[in-house]
Length: 145
Image (cartoon, helix red, strand yellow):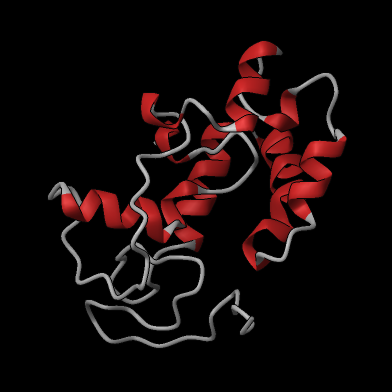
């Protein structure tokens, strides 16, 4: 599950871009309804070596920003405050990860980003399960630009 731990404190398991990539490879067997046309292999994959947080954490020999001796730095604070609603919880995520450990945090995130009825993985902006039809209030809502 470490592949779903982004250095910046996001849970990649709830990212529609990585879900699109996994579905294209046959690794995710759900009918993913998303407009995402930019598949991502995940922050810890070799293909994402240009991620500023991956580069910085490798330089600081940290597993994530929360374990960096310079945390919180201006870069992660700025990222937390972007226009993307799901970015607004990275500082809280990193603090929680440091408090309970990465494995326990990943388990919490997996549970949070799964359909409560059937257990299917869901993404940040989803309000219904593509498998069982269960609906819920999405945690994040994109505002029209």
